Amino acid sequence: MPHSHLKLYSGPEQTAAYATPEDNVTVSVGEVLPLIADAVNKQRTWIADFEHEDITISRDLFEVLSAYQFFSRPSA
Image (cartoon, rainbow, N blue to C red; front, side):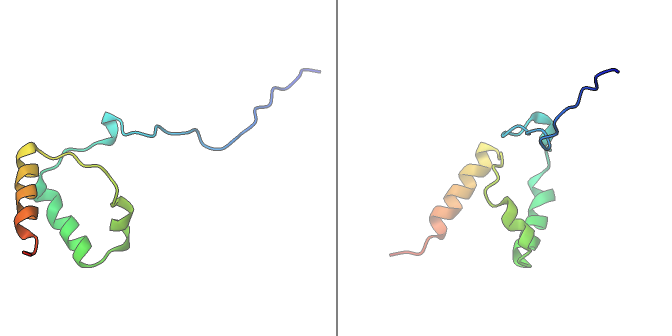
């Protein structure tokens, strides 16, 4: 009688804890910002799922946003 080889199933394989290049998509700010703003404005619950996601932006945009944040603070 031949022996059968059984394999123990322990659930799905672990995925990488970091994003791979295949996981990333490049879009313009003009394409994605209105969608994000709409989701935040309408208080869509799924937007909170991405609250801690890292995004990559250009240095120019970062500097403009940093200046905007600085000058938007309430004065003492």
